[in-house]
Image (cartoon, rainbow, N blue to C red; front, side):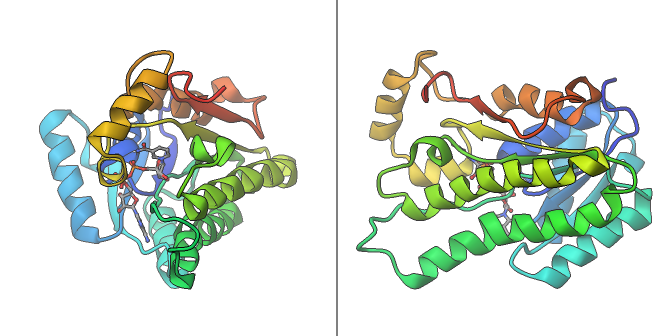
Length: 250
Ligand code: NAD
């Protein structure tokens, strides 16, 4: 098992991409903090996971966290330290999206997007690094293909993901001294609740047609990239952004 006894925090792991990563990490021996925006969502996610696979109760910790609230982030990190005593892996995966033209956007649209996708990520990372700097570790940020290519009517979301890429490279440079690796995964179109809210059937068909592998992704299609970056197999890899998008962006 490639992650035996590693302790991982995965934000946004009650559903979608984060939940797929959590399930695979648990199978690989990791202990995982399952984080959702509400504690009950995290508890429900764990109940559902227990119906699908075997794991020990000690391998999971349900956490409700509001990434827009600094105290909530601090509480989350201290709960993990209290239970397992260390953090080896942080996956900053939680995020929100929106579709709106620049002229239709309100100030709050910009602030809300950055509050979660950028400031929440930065605050979580800062809190985790306080502990991780003594042991080394791996931080993986979930970016997006629109953080590489931009997106029409997605300026708030796209700019937040460009920021995520900048954070990834800057922190790779800053935190290497502690043997902390910082990388990102940039997914293409992936079938989750988020995608269903923002991509209609017509757009989905068009995106599929433009994708060399001729399909939209499934959350499980992404897991291998996270697994590699989290594991010691990636011990000399930092500051990279791995695109997992069926070839849509190149
Ligand atoms: P999802 O909507 O299914 O899951 C998002 C998760 O983030 C949920 O667990 C939710 O509880 C959590 N979250 C949202 N706001 C939060 C907050 N304020 N505090 C704490 N948690 C919060 O989305 P998904 O598709 O699984 O997306 C996961 C990541 O992948 C996001 O960062 C998203 O931008 C990125 N992404 C998704 C796609 C796609 O096509 N699905 C493509 C590119 C990038």
